[in-house]
Image 1 (cartoon, rainbow, N blue to C red):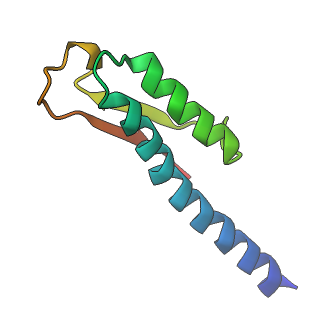
Image 2 (cartoon, rainbow, N blue to C red; image 1 turned 180 degrees about the vertical axis):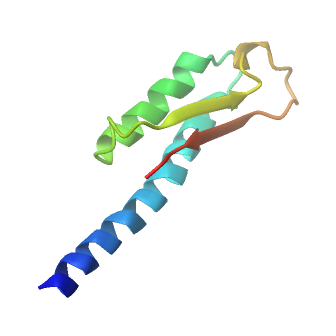
Length: 85
């Protein structure tokens, strides 16, 4: 029985480890569009996290530059999520 629960727990941790990068990718999509803002990125990430069942997981969204709307056309934009288990 313990082996079964261990397998389920392991599967959940793998799921979370895959859901976080997927949410980051969802946030990066609106970030690269011209005229996008941090709330657009945050909304995309929140929607993906909510759909994965991780809405209240304590994740922190960070973008670089912080003000995405001020980024020039060819500048690099980084979207990252920090998560502690």
